[in-house]
Every structure is written in C-alpha cells, then in structure tokens.
Image (cartoon, rainbow, N blue to C red; front, side, top):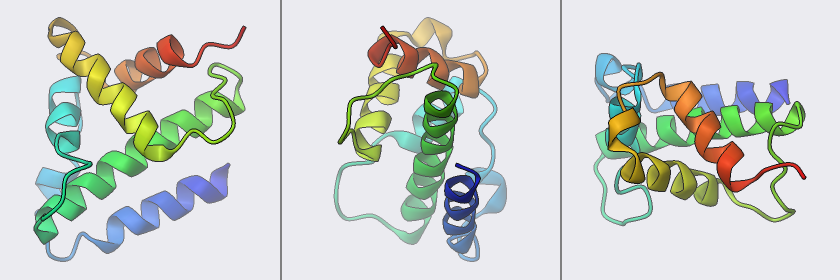
Length: 118
C-alpha cells in the first residue's frame, strides 16, 4: 500500500514543473477537490489540466487504498481509479452543502457510501 502512495505522489509531482504549485496543492476542502476533479474523463487538456487531474487521481486513489486496506470500503474486484473519482465527484455534486468540509473526510464518506463492507 505504501508503494502505491509513493508512486502516486511521484507521478503527481512529476507534472509540477509547468503547473502552479499553489493551485495544484491547494486541496483543503471539498470545494477545492471538486474543482480539481471536474472534467477528469474528458479529452483535450492543457498541461495545467493534466497536473490538476493527476493530483485529483492520486488524492482519491490514496484515500481509497487506505480505506480498503483498513476494511472501511470493500470495492469489488475490477473497480478502476476512474470509478473511484466518478463516485467522489458524484457525491460532491449531490451534496454541495457539505463541500466546505475537509476533502479527505468527504472522499471517505463518498467511498464508504458506495462500497460498504457487508
């Protein structure tokens, strides 16, 4: 699990040379995460968009792997990173009243809701 986190961080940071570091790493709440992740599955992006999406992907994937490791979520085999992102973005769209909250908790809430351990 720690290898996955290290790899995700390294991938994210590799895009940082051309992107504004403050913009990419300013995830403090659900509003910021929602903005970073919007448009993830569309085509035709700039280098800054790719850095933003890579951060979104690494952020959500890291939390998903941690929750899975600790048996807080139980996704079925074959669930993709894009699906985790879709679940989180959908949750943030459905709950704009919660977006001011801590991004990591909101990601956890979204994933626990969709991938409960029974």
